[in-house]
Amino acid sequence: MKLGKRLTKIEAMVASGYDHIWDCCCDHGLLGAALLARQAAPSIHFVDIVADIMQQLKTRLHRFYPLVATSATYCQWYVHCLDAALLPLDSFRGKHLIILAGIGGERMAELVNLIFTKHPSADIDFLLCPVHHQFALRQQLIALNFSLKTETLLKENQRFYEILLVSSGQPAEPPCQKIHPVGSQLWNTTSEEQRRIAAAYLDKTLNHYRRIQRNHALQIQPVIDAYGAVKL
Image (cartoon, rainbow, N blue to C red; front, side):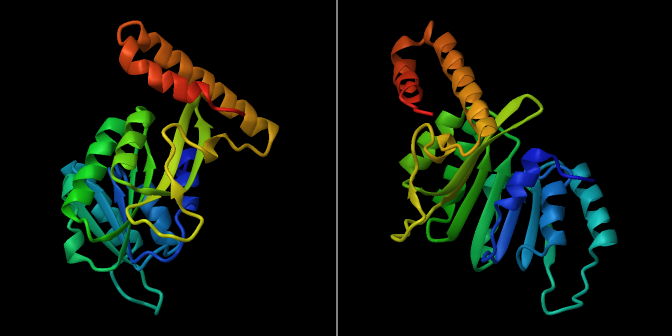
């Protein structure tokens, strides 16, 4: 099945150099299967808590990607039916990329915190695409002292998505930088279409927080100020 615009962009942001890629909350495994097809890493892990879906996925993977090493570039896959907070990273050595998408930013922030707290010395990058509560997620990433590798904004089916590639480490060399509370690279557009998308997203976000402000004025005003300072 062909990937949509959002999953296509997430897949394209997965660079080489990882030993293990974890497609968490993977649902039917479309993203992980695309990564497996291009052998994006030696090991691709499919993770979801829904047992029936994972069993169906395992059956399809056995059919289309049998576990038989046929070349030096062979890519191994694993299916894990568990909560993403319980990833068995200690059982798999190397550099990890953990992909979290399709869930809210608050839950995503909780998962990132739990994973990092449980594996503080592991070499982990996170590729994150929350469906909402992006500000709360960024606050958690900043609190954990994560660094930003890249971020982007896209629109699919009338919804806006922020995608962030962040690192749990603090490499001294570029291109890593500090994570901004409302994004930095998101607003650097190179075309009129990108500018329109960024402007529409900024307007929608500001209106959202202004509605919330009616009942939570003191807590929300700093968020509005932060988005209000964005220059396109």
